[in-house]
Image (cartoon, rainbow, N blue to C red; front, side, top):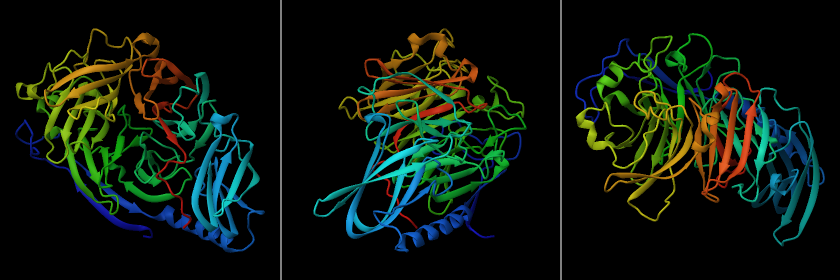
Length: 542
């Protein structure tokens, strides 16, 4: 079969505990686990290479120069608000482009600093259904510049994108960096990005669910389907904002599930998160096909598609937590006892921080040994052998939390680690029942790993009250440009509204946006702040 290079299968059966486990014995599943296979699939890349051959022929044809630039809108049929410029010049020049916005803050610029005579220039950040004004600045090695004006017409915006209402946007205090946009990562349907005016400047034609991450090389880790009308999100792409594909990993759908346990509707295999490790490999939250779901991680070799490591959380945590779990139930009878909804890597000590919604718990695990390093949460109900892992401090226990991430150093103290997360504040198994469901908030805590203490250093959301309580989903992100936080109240009004706010260190709201009228379940799972032209991305034709 064309395009299939490698196939690797991993099988999770009855496992003995990993190193550092505090519970002895084996795991007993009610049903036999199924296989989860991963296949490197090059079919889409083969189709893509045919397009690129055509573009290369146009570039080399001699028909296109600085006075007659070839423009191809949406060159990879995946990014409608993008274009590719092709032309040659007699002398080596560098290129700068500018997509005119409604104001200076919404104008998107980028410089391509290599001097060359063959030019394939990606244009990102066009407006939908508009004749966009694009300026192309050409500069030779002597420093002489000339500008060319282009008009690039785009089609109408996809109907499945939410209505965007900007209630507040103080661009002087927002972290906009180099033409940065606010990205909406959906639970399903379209991923898209808007500027400070609420205008969509990027979206993908490929549906997306939960996994939308920038990689070290500037590309995107992006979970999609074989086709938008397919049932299962089981195609993981390494792609970019232009829509070019670099890798495609197909996951078998036999272990797919959804959050409700319904037998119909959309499902996923990589259910909540995926990150890049320092090795370049990918660490993914998956279902393993057993009767217990959302409690397994795999490390995927980026080059081969082989699964190099498996972490089954049943091997780290008490048997009673999954064998006797009854805090939630599903129509399919599967047991979602942990509900891992995030993973982040801490390069300081080669560890990972994970969030488990259904245990109201955030914990740190040594990635080399799988040993628990600490646990954040209410220690009640945990066996005595686990009490040593809990951090000491007067910090309210989280409830049903999401998106726990490690922050850059905040206090010039190598012994501390700051964690930012979104606390839904709903007691699932052992959260704070007194305040449960009264509000949701972003929280930043500081952990001293030497003396095993924890303190709360920043919060936002409690004063908004029940109107901004979200029983599921949500995120909080640290914006390194100025220290602001981007907070996503993703499931307001029973999933009818997603509200995204950017707030300062002092709690001042400098961006307030409501998303409404989106398709069912297409709420903002997470909100991110990225630049379409990030510093690590380099586009090459072919």
